[in-house]
Image 1 (cartoon, rainbow, N blue to C red):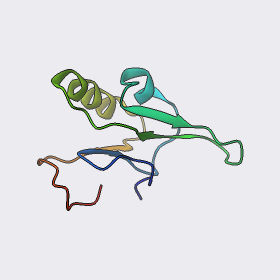
Image 2: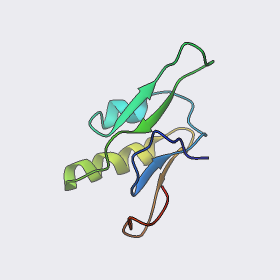
Image 3: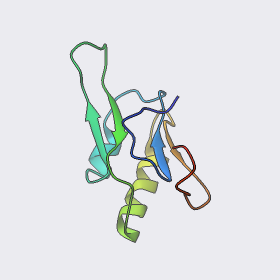
Length: 84
């Protein structure tokens, strides 16, 4: 399952997320954390798809560094009619 908070596009975070916030540390302009007190642990989600080569590089690094493999990356260009 993909979190509804994710901004549609090439990258997204699934429910495999353990809320470690490593992605937020690597690419804070693109990822955010939700630490709702009503849930056992927080989770992260995509707040902005990369729009530059630098941000693309950081998002790819975050995806490759994710300890739970929760960040998915579409291998083809994102099309607006595709679901995240």
